[in-house]
Length: 209
Image 1 (cartoon, rainbow, N blue to C red):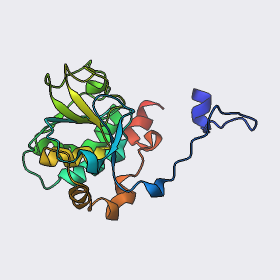
Image 2 (cartoon, one colour):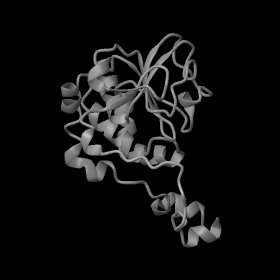
Image 3 (tube, rainbow, N blue to C red):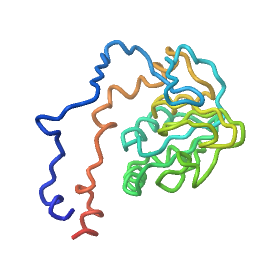
Image 4 (cartoon, rainbow, N blue to C red):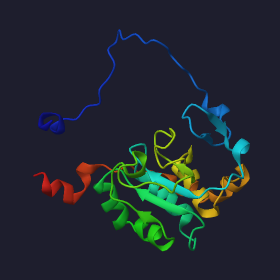
């Protein structure tokens, strides 16, 4: 690991690698957000099909997220008062948490009443906390199998941006409402989705030198 850190290179496939199947998806054909519906990660529907469903709790976290998703959620929520839903926030690492605190994103989460969890799996594995029994939930986690996030919970999987919109209105929005709520993200996308390079964080470098 130490040798790799001195000269990090991404892994690449062998030139003669063979695949069981090649799946090509034309992203130009995706016109609106897609959600995995309760309780099967393969049950994918466009937002317009499920719009209007009332949501009790929202979870923004898991290893599927990166720091940009929390900045984007903060942008959606920055002018909100108390949220109509219970919002859980759990970034994947302590370094994400530290940087988000430094940038004031955690202040936004605190102001709107979000519950910030210890960085890690949290609700995704149901091993740090659980949603209420029978709750209807939007989550950014990797799976929505029955009882994974909470007993009898119905869980939709979505992007962090959509999850933040849901947290702000307490239901799955229409496509038009979604676009209105996330309009402020695109002009700042380069800064919002700027990746967190751990080796460029002073505190991290000091600990490891």
